[in-house]
Image (cartoon, rainbow, N blue to C red; front, side, top):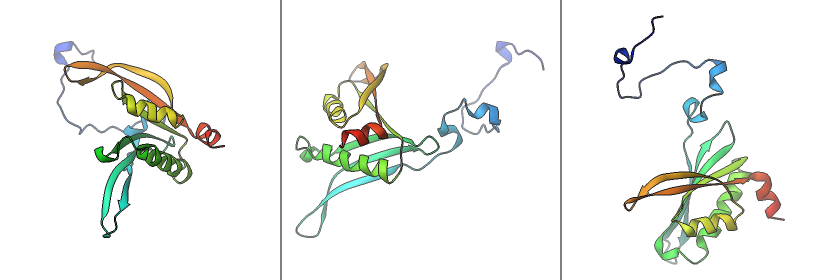
Length: 160
């Protein structure tokens, strides 16, 4: 095989490059390169007297099925914020994730300016595991992303 010079190396933009990974190489890749699972989204609502449902928010788990973990995203509609509903939603969602989905860990990435989410996750047992320095651009500046994690065993022990 010939050594390539910089001006001989070409590329195109696209996602059509498929190559079979050897068993030896698989360990170097994220599970997302090997298999993709649909996210599991729990939509929370309140039943109204007239039979309609009022949406309150959602909790979504972006699954990594081989490694039995997920990244969590959550949202509470503005009218339900500050009332403890988010904590209740997340508590129910974590129970579902650890018991029914049989996850081993859950990861959350939180922008440093989202102090409410940080406090909420910490109140449910999530621990700060790392910081992605200046990884989020918002409102004219770069912010850190705080990586938080919750292990199944820690969740079990916090419920006793």
